[in-house]
Image 1 (spheres, one colour):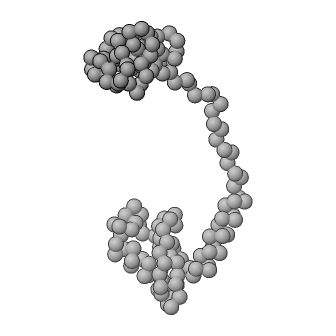
Image 2 (image 1 turned 60 degrees about the horizontal axis):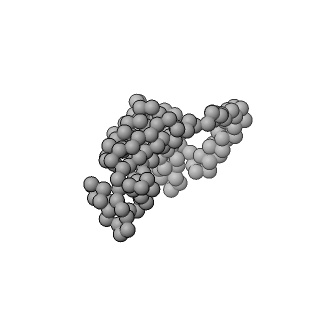
Image 3 (image 1 turned 180 degrees about the horizontal axis):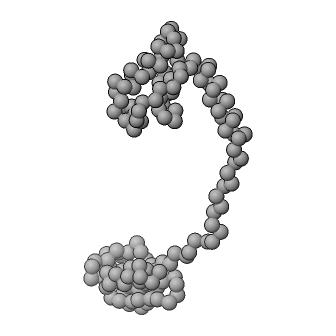
Length: 159
């Protein structure tokens, strides 16, 4: 028994392969299959459109002719140009912890919430500081939570 391909839908989006003895029988079988489970298959099509049944070779030839026609009939659309403006700079304001002598405490040194060192040989955090890359803002305070809050406030409102 030959296999037919039957387009189903208003704009031939869906195809149903059907085994049937004739093209008319293939159309009827495809319509029966889709109509029996319409909600799952083609709920959006109203009314159900069943196209002509084609053999696989006829279907391929038809698709090839459509592709050839559509490529030669319409000129290619110009590609959209990307904007040439560079993206705006993203400002950052990293927080750094400092010792009493003003040197930077390395980020791998851990401290208690009060600033006492948990790392061997670290004198402890005395203050935290944040400086924005915009060059117009900085803050310094003994509490790192306060510095983090100010830093986030500056970045979200100014930039």
